[in-house]
Amino acid sequence: MSTTTTPQRTRRRGELGRAGSLASHGILIVASLIALFPIAWLVFLSLGPDSDDYLHPAGIWKKMTLGNYSFVLQHTEFFDWLKSSLIVSLGTTVIGVTIAASTGYAVSRMRFPGYRKFMWVLLVTQMFPIAVLIVPMYQILADLQLIDSYLGLILVYCSTAVPYCAWLLKGYFDTIPFEIDEAGRVDGLNPFGTFARLILPLAKPGLAVAAFYSFLTAFGEVAFASTFMLSDTKYTFAVGLQTFVSEHDAQRNLMAATAVLIAIPVAAFFYLVQKNLVTGLTAGGTKG
Amino acid sequence: MTVAIDRATGKRHGDRAPRPGPRGRLKSAYQKHWYAYAMIIPVVVVLGVLVLYPLVYGLYLTLTDANSLNTARTIGVNHIDATYKFIGLDNYKDILFGPTSYDRFWSHFIWTIVWTAVCVTLHYTIGLALALLLNQKLRGRTLYRLILILPWAVPTFVTVFGWRFMLADGGIINTALHTLHLPQPDWLESTFWQRTAAIMVNTWCGVPFMMVSMLGGLQSIDASLYEAAEMDGAGPWQRFRYVTLPGLRSVSSTVVLLGVIWTFNQFAVIFLLFGNTAPDASILVTWSYYLGFGQQPRDFAQSAAYGILLLAILIVFTSFYRRWLNRNDQQLAI
Image 1 (cartoon, one colour):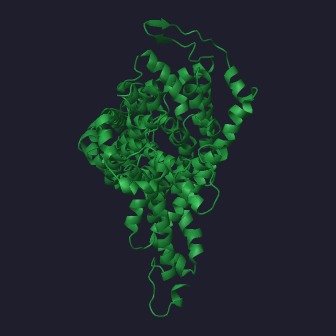
Image 2 (cartoon, chains in turn blue, yellow):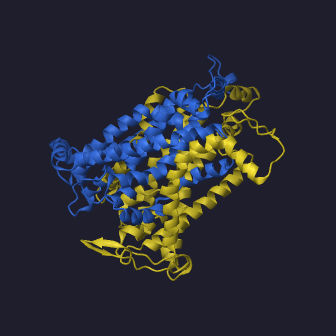
């Protein structure tokens, strides 16, 4: 055994020898650099004033400027994109969580005929490739004159957000002790009352996780937004950012600045909620 | 028989009265379960309108020759009615067996399988390795963890553009390779390097989720199991093989399934990295998008048919996967 061979000091469980600790730090530092570098590079490039500065990055040190940022904020549709992104993502989040909450409770607590089939439908809907719905959705929305409208995009996003939230909330409701339901029933509440008065207030963290996740997913969606939003004032960020390279004169410096402006608040938001997000995802993931 | 207690109504499933007739059964099922049905109604309605209806409509479109020239459209003030017609299963026949079907479908199919397998393997092994490192008592591991989840925190559509700058001709990666006197591949032009670049970027994006999930799995393994294994004289490798891996089984089977589904459906990375310029590096999802929206005239029918085929592949895969898990006495954790 390894612990009996160390004479002076017994090593406790989980503590590493010098070599092991060095190796671990070495690997983790390399991995961290790899994780960090592309984003750091984007920030660095955003400080260079010319659109082909990315070819001669060394030159940026001498002419570093925040000009790209002020240009993006003043002369592009940045704030229109911000508005569209927020409307669409928040709309999806609110509708998704509201509609899915009672279903998550029902599938967590009750076994009804058709339960397994219903769960299977919820699972399959989440794995729909975008290619399945994008063509028919495009035709239907065109018929309804909903192409290039926020409502249309919100409805499309709800097709994945709603089943996803239902799954996630089921996972959270499963962690709330069943005794609470029983107490509610003893006190004469029907299942609706139990759900609304006892479980929902307890499930706030779970609801928050579902909300965060729907928000982040809707915010980062590319395919539907690129296809359904046509006028450049209604683009979400995911579409707007592409306009900097799809034109012939690629304005890479402006694009980098916009990318950084988008990334900072989203990453900050992500870090605020990440602890809950991870527990929420795995709680949904480890309960049967 | 296992007795499942319905937690909301407090009734046992096991003890029930002699079976009544079909009408009575329907009535009693309704009386017993109407709470449940009332609660799932909103989701059922939403899924019916937003998923089932488009799905059926899409299925119908795949049986026609609809494209952007013959579907209903409005140009200015003129409304032109749809003129596409029903052609049965010809689209599927053409995609799977028609002339040049290898170039159009099978080559993308093979690449999609390779893409999914390579990406998920890399995600899983790198994620597990980093999780094991972070699960040690190590100085600064919170900081490492925060840095390592950065690729997950920043939206993909932002980071992909960062990679595009790095991979571009004359970008930092090739400059670095040049200084090291190594060959400089044209990452964004030739098919092989495009594929390599796509796998690289997607691996970078997908590792944090795996790492965090595996870390959660590692932390939920009971420490007394390791103690017991050590008492029995198990070395580090044996502890990993007989305690850690079995302890991670349930988390692993879930995240691998999710990883396969997400990678198979990964649209943003390839689409944003190459746009419509790289038909050969397209996986089936982006190729289907190209058919329906990236070319003129837009071929709606074939694009939708690809979508249905993709869904079929995923459903077949998932049911085999679940069956395989069940046979090995494992529960899928979702």
